[in-house]
Length: 217
Figure (cartoon, rainbow, N blue to C red):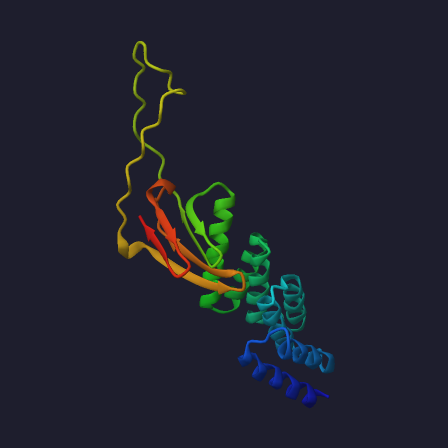
Protein backbone atom coordinates (compact mmCIF):
# COMPACT_ATOMS: atom_id res chain seq x y z
CA UNK A 1 0.00 0.00 0.00
CA UNK A 2 2.83 2.36 0.90
CA UNK A 3 4.54 1.75 -2.46
CA UNK A 4 1.29 2.32 -4.34
CA UNK A 5 0.76 5.56 -2.43
CA UNK A 6 4.27 6.67 -3.36
CA UNK A 7 3.64 5.97 -7.03
CA UNK A 8 0.40 7.91 -6.91
CA UNK A 9 2.11 10.78 -5.12
CA UNK A 10 4.85 10.85 -7.75
CA UNK A 11 2.23 10.90 -10.50
CA UNK A 12 0.52 13.83 -8.80
CA UNK A 13 3.80 15.74 -8.68
CA UNK A 14 4.39 15.08 -12.37
CA UNK A 15 0.91 16.26 -13.31
CA UNK A 16 1.51 19.68 -11.72
CA UNK A 17 3.45 20.81 -14.78
CA UNK A 18 0.20 21.00 -16.74
CA UNK A 19 -1.23 23.61 -14.36
CA UNK A 20 -4.57 21.79 -14.16
CA UNK A 21 -4.79 21.90 -10.37
CA UNK A 22 -8.47 21.00 -10.20
CA UNK A 23 -7.97 17.88 -12.26
CA UNK A 24 -5.25 15.28 -11.96
CA UNK A 25 -3.08 16.73 -9.14
CA UNK A 26 -5.90 17.15 -6.62
CA UNK A 27 -7.33 13.73 -7.40
CA UNK A 28 -3.93 12.01 -7.24
CA UNK A 29 -2.91 13.63 -3.96
CA UNK A 30 -6.26 12.67 -2.44
CA UNK A 31 -5.81 9.10 -3.64
CA UNK A 32 -2.29 8.95 -2.22
CA UNK A 33 -3.61 10.18 1.14
CA UNK A 34 -6.39 7.61 1.13
CA UNK A 35 -3.75 4.90 0.56
CA UNK A 36 -1.33 6.21 3.17
CA UNK A 37 -2.42 8.99 5.53
CA UNK A 38 0.81 8.93 7.53
CA UNK A 39 2.89 11.09 5.18
CA UNK A 40 2.96 14.78 6.08
CA UNK A 41 4.30 15.72 2.64
CA UNK A 42 1.16 14.35 0.98
CA UNK A 43 -0.99 16.79 2.94
CA UNK A 44 1.44 19.67 2.33
CA UNK A 45 1.29 19.13 -1.42
CA UNK A 46 -2.48 18.94 -1.43
CA UNK A 47 -2.60 22.12 0.67
CA UNK A 48 -0.54 23.84 -2.03
CA UNK A 49 -3.05 22.74 -4.67
CA UNK A 50 -5.96 23.98 -2.56
CA UNK A 51 -4.26 27.39 -2.30
CA UNK A 52 -4.01 27.56 -6.09
CA UNK A 53 -7.70 26.68 -6.29
CA UNK A 54 -8.55 29.36 -3.69
CA UNK A 55 -9.80 26.65 -1.31
CA UNK A 56 -8.10 28.30 1.63
CA UNK A 57 -10.06 26.58 4.41
CA UNK A 58 -9.16 23.18 2.94
CA UNK A 59 -5.54 24.27 2.67
CA UNK A 60 -5.44 25.17 6.37
CA UNK A 61 -7.00 21.82 7.24
CA UNK A 62 -4.41 19.91 5.19
CA UNK A 63 -1.56 21.94 6.68
CA UNK A 64 -2.86 21.15 10.17
CA UNK A 65 -2.98 17.45 9.27
CA UNK A 66 0.62 17.64 8.09
CA UNK A 67 1.70 19.35 11.30
CA UNK A 68 -0.07 16.71 13.36
CA UNK A 69 2.13 14.15 11.62
CA UNK A 70 5.29 16.27 11.62
CA UNK A 71 5.35 19.26 13.96
CA UNK A 72 8.64 20.47 12.42
CA UNK A 73 7.40 20.63 8.83
CA UNK A 74 8.41 24.10 7.66
CA UNK A 75 6.42 23.93 4.42
CA UNK A 76 3.27 23.02 6.35
CA UNK A 77 3.62 26.19 8.44
CA UNK A 78 4.20 28.26 5.30
CA UNK A 79 1.19 26.79 3.48
CA UNK A 80 -0.98 27.31 6.56
CA UNK A 81 0.21 30.90 6.93
CA UNK A 82 -0.40 31.62 3.25
CA UNK A 83 -3.95 30.30 3.39
CA UNK A 84 -4.68 32.21 6.60
CA UNK A 85 -3.29 35.42 5.08
CA UNK A 86 -5.53 35.03 2.04
CA UNK A 87 -8.46 34.78 4.46
CA UNK A 88 -7.27 38.04 6.09
CA UNK A 89 -6.45 36.26 9.34
CA UNK A 90 -3.21 38.20 9.61
CA UNK A 91 -2.37 37.58 13.28
CA UNK A 92 -2.80 33.81 12.90
CA UNK A 93 -0.84 33.85 9.65
CA UNK A 94 1.97 35.81 11.33
CA UNK A 95 2.18 33.19 14.07
CA UNK A 96 2.44 30.43 11.48
CA UNK A 97 5.26 32.14 9.59
CA UNK A 98 7.09 32.81 12.85
CA UNK A 99 6.86 29.09 13.63
CA UNK A 100 8.37 28.30 10.24
CA UNK A 101 11.24 30.73 10.80
CA UNK A 102 11.90 29.29 14.24
CA UNK A 103 12.66 26.01 12.48
CA UNK A 104 14.48 27.29 9.40
CA UNK A 105 15.49 30.58 7.81
CA UNK A 106 13.12 30.69 4.86
CA UNK A 107 12.95 33.65 2.47
CA UNK A 108 9.28 33.02 1.58
CA UNK A 109 8.41 32.88 5.28
CA UNK A 110 10.30 36.13 5.94
CA UNK A 111 8.57 37.85 3.05
CA UNK A 112 5.11 36.70 4.14
CA UNK A 113 5.88 37.67 7.74
CA UNK A 114 6.68 41.23 6.67
CA UNK A 115 3.40 41.32 4.73
CA UNK A 116 1.52 40.24 7.85
CA UNK A 117 3.25 42.89 9.94
CA UNK A 118 2.40 45.56 7.36
CA UNK A 119 -1.27 44.53 7.34
CA UNK A 120 -1.46 44.43 11.13
CA UNK A 121 0.26 47.80 11.39
CA UNK A 122 -2.23 49.32 8.94
CA UNK A 123 -5.14 47.77 10.85
CA UNK A 124 -3.83 49.31 14.07
CA UNK A 125 -3.69 52.79 12.59
CA UNK A 126 -0.07 52.74 11.48
CA UNK A 127 0.86 55.14 8.71
CA UNK A 128 1.45 53.70 5.29
CA UNK A 129 0.52 53.88 1.66
CA UNK A 130 -1.27 51.25 -0.37
CA UNK A 131 -2.67 50.79 -3.84
CA UNK A 132 -4.20 47.77 -5.50
CA UNK A 133 -5.64 46.55 -8.77
CA UNK A 134 -6.97 43.20 -9.89
CA UNK A 135 -3.42 41.97 -10.36
CA UNK A 136 -1.22 44.19 -8.22
CA UNK A 137 -1.21 45.39 -4.64
CA UNK A 138 1.42 47.67 -3.14
CA UNK A 139 1.82 48.74 0.47
CA UNK A 140 4.43 50.51 2.58
CA UNK A 141 4.43 50.77 6.31
CA UNK A 142 5.95 53.81 8.01
CA UNK A 143 6.19 55.46 11.37
CA UNK A 144 6.86 59.17 11.18
CA UNK A 145 8.47 60.94 14.16
CA UNK A 146 6.26 63.18 16.24
CA UNK A 147 6.59 66.91 15.59
CA UNK A 148 8.95 68.79 17.89
CA UNK A 149 7.87 72.26 16.72
CA UNK A 150 6.95 74.52 19.67
CA UNK A 151 3.37 75.72 19.87
CA UNK A 152 2.79 79.20 18.49
CA UNK A 153 1.25 81.76 20.89
CA UNK A 154 -2.29 82.86 20.10
CA UNK A 155 -2.74 86.35 18.65
CA UNK A 156 -5.68 88.67 19.06
CA UNK A 157 -8.36 87.95 16.49
CA UNK A 158 -6.71 84.69 15.41
CA UNK A 159 -8.68 81.49 14.98
CA UNK A 160 -8.42 79.00 17.85
CA UNK A 161 -5.91 76.23 17.36
CA UNK A 162 -8.67 73.67 16.82
CA UNK A 163 -10.01 75.64 13.88
CA UNK A 164 -6.70 76.61 12.31
CA UNK A 165 -5.60 74.70 9.26
CA UNK A 166 -2.61 72.42 9.75
CA UNK A 167 0.30 73.34 7.50
CA UNK A 168 1.45 70.54 5.22
CA UNK A 169 4.34 68.51 6.59
CA UNK A 170 7.69 68.71 4.86
CA UNK A 171 8.70 65.77 2.68
CA UNK A 172 11.26 63.40 4.13
CA UNK A 173 14.44 62.91 2.14
CA UNK A 174 14.80 59.18 1.66
CA UNK A 175 18.10 57.36 1.29
CA UNK A 176 17.47 55.01 -1.68
CA UNK A 177 19.86 52.45 -0.18
CA UNK A 178 17.55 52.06 2.81
CA UNK A 179 14.37 51.38 0.83
CA UNK A 180 13.49 47.68 0.54
CA UNK A 181 10.80 45.88 -1.38
CA UNK A 182 9.58 42.36 -1.90
CA UNK A 183 6.83 40.67 -3.86
CA UNK A 184 4.67 37.59 -3.55
CA UNK A 185 2.44 35.92 -6.10
CA UNK A 186 -0.75 34.24 -4.92
CA UNK A 187 -3.94 33.03 -6.63
CA UNK A 188 -5.61 36.38 -5.97
CA UNK A 189 -2.82 38.45 -7.54
CA UNK A 190 0.67 39.81 -7.02
CA UNK A 191 1.46 41.77 -3.85
CA UNK A 192 4.38 44.17 -3.64
CA UNK A 193 5.51 45.45 -0.25
CA UNK A 194 7.74 48.54 -0.05
CA UNK A 195 9.49 49.34 3.22
CA UNK A 196 10.53 52.97 3.73
CA UNK A 197 10.54 54.47 7.22
CA UNK A 198 9.32 57.94 8.05
CA UNK A 199 7.12 58.35 4.99
CA UNK A 200 3.70 59.93 5.27
CA UNK A 201 0.92 58.94 2.91
CA UNK A 202 0.83 62.33 1.19
CA UNK A 203 4.51 62.02 0.30
CA UNK A 204 4.13 58.78 -1.63
CA UNK A 205 2.57 58.38 -5.05
CA UNK A 206 1.65 54.94 -6.32
CA UNK A 207 0.57 54.30 -9.88
CA UNK A 208 -0.53 50.94 -11.20
CA UNK A 209 -1.37 49.58 -14.61
CA UNK A 210 -2.15 46.07 -15.78
CA UNK A 211 1.54 45.54 -16.52
CA UNK A 212 3.43 47.75 -14.07
CA UNK A 213 3.53 49.55 -10.74
CA UNK A 214 5.56 52.63 -9.83
CA UNK A 215 6.21 54.13 -6.39
CA UNK A 216 7.51 57.70 -6.03
CA UNK A 217 8.60 58.97 -2.62
